Image (tube, rainbow, N blue to C red; front, side):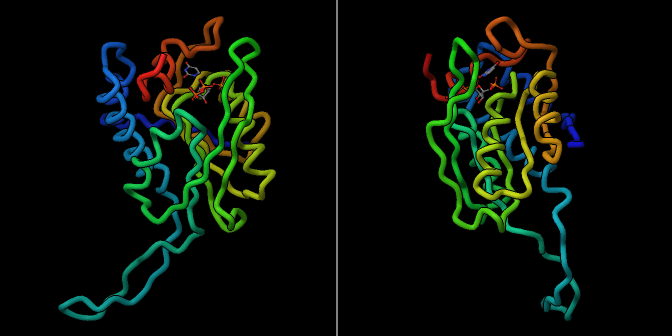
Length: 209
Ligand code: PRP
Ligand code: URA
């Protein structure tokens, strides 16, 4: 069964409060999402495997560790996931970035895929799928389907705010995927928005309405 990790680091929680605030403007919202993505990437990479190599310092030869695991692929769910990519790349600059385009039909709330482009060596990579919001879970579940259909074997899902419904959907349909979130909120409202949430992540990131 997939595990759920809630990152309760004080810096993440502090910044998330200002991300939630409706009076935070587009520029600051974008900067804060970027910063939280970096902090979450620091936590999510905790289990990366290391191997020992020999390094020659100015003083003497020594054993030291470097990363030894599979290469990383970052996949934002368009649009809003884009806001988290640069923040992760600050810590994993050599990662390749794929994109999966999905939008929620406003009436049915069902996800509709309109774009998918992944690194060519999908099977060789560990993927971090990112989207600020996990609401009904429809988009994340569909994006994971899409990644797996193209050969992805190991996927982590990372978001800022999740509703219990979305977490349950991933756990039920993709029990092999661990979920990393900054906050688990109360519920969804009748329009499928997370309560209290932060509103529409894509609109707040890109200044659209
Ligand atoms: C938002 C959000 C997620 C999705 C979550 O995207 O960024 O992708 O909704 O909802 P779900 O869990 O119920 O599927 P939206 O469909 O608004 O598209 P956008 O990013 O293009 O604004
Ligand atoms: N998508 C968003 O952007 N916000 C929500 O609260 C739910 C889905």
